[in-house]
Length: 337
Image 1 (cartoon, rainbow, N blue to C red):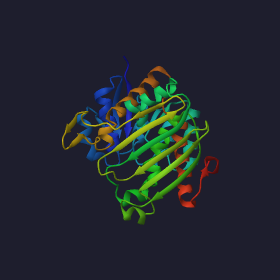
Image 2: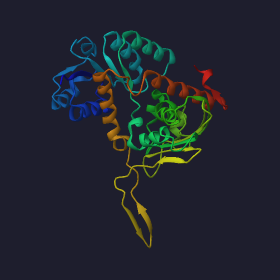
Image 3: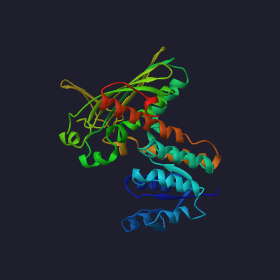
Image 4: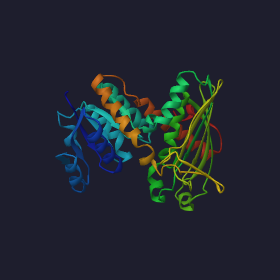
């Protein structure tokens, strides 16, 4: 079997994770090169995975005719530009979310991909989570009837530094953006209106940085369904990730993953494990599965499971959420498109 040669741009935490998943779990792919502005610090790690080519300039990857696909795992502000350049170079693209925080830049990247005829998959890995995928499958099978309410709980175990918030786009762009994608995925419909109530209840420094750390977001979908997302930057008991779709015939719900499903029942109470601590533990297999589907789409010339439009829509919802929070009113998606 001919292996698909791939280059990885950015060797931070997520770049390393994808590289290791490919090296250990994707036999049809071979990492030919990685690139990072701090290439020297990545060299030993890359060599441990059998990656001989470690570049400072990502253009060395784009200019390599043997490389068919690239993973864009660099900082958010570089995603759109590299996507355009990679498309122009004829490479299939896996781009970490978001493509950009600017709608015009996202649309330019999408246009470049469509013009080049290459594949683009956006890194909304939670769609590949075994629990959430099962909920979606049950909805598609009609088990719960017509969806009426989509409920998503997403709470982190600890808040990020305020310095991160200043450059991330804020909670709605760096955290809730996953939930906006999940809402579209589970409902099978587009969000038409967003209303936000938000506060600073966890870390005053986040508020001083111009953001919030606690939010309730309500959504109206084109199919008539309603949605509610609750977010917190700090859940004392761990990483809280739950989904429910309630419909005309029933409900499908996914609870948290835990290290074990053991329950201790005594006179003192009934006790079970806390949720898995953070996203690397909770979504470990989903990162592998999204890579498998990306390379399968290339090998079989099929559509990627998370398309360019799937990369655009959550950013639009995020912009509407920010506008709603700042203006204290419901905002229609048509206002930010």
